[in-house]
Image (cartoon, rainbow, N blue to C red):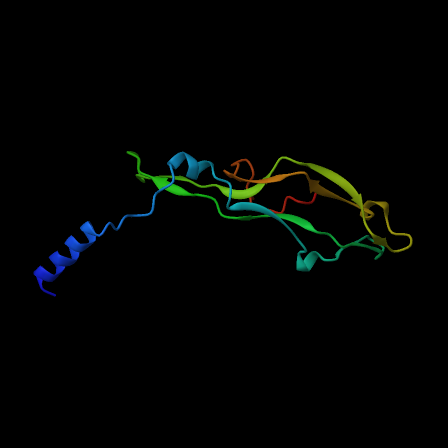
Amino acid sequence: MSPNYLFLVFVFFIFSGVRAAPKKPRSEILTSNETCLMRHMHIPAMNPLVRKDENGKTCRIHLTTPVCRGYCRTYEHGTHVFPHRAQKSVICMHDGGHYEEIPMEECDEGADAKIRTIRVLKDSRCVCKACEKSRSKCMRNSLFK
């Protein structure tokens, strides 16, 4: 391509009014929680959830599990200290709520009392949050206790 042709294309774009899409303010991007949502799902390996006692007796429950899914804004910024970058990493995870004990739906006759109930996380919400360093497995399934 000739330099004259490139110059004409450049001038055309300047005068044609081509503009970039308006950007959201940084504060709006950082506080937005639209991409981290809760969804109630049947988890295939846990539907039905089966618990077994030491005598081989079982209890079952068809459970809809609240799952946080989505993505959260993660970024790096430069620093004066090696490795010359700092990272802000957050994950979509449960926040708040309490554990509630619910009875299993179907139990074999004579099943142990320990497997007749299950504790499930209730009334939590999904947020973008930094992983607590005291918890080594932040992605661990914390829905059941």
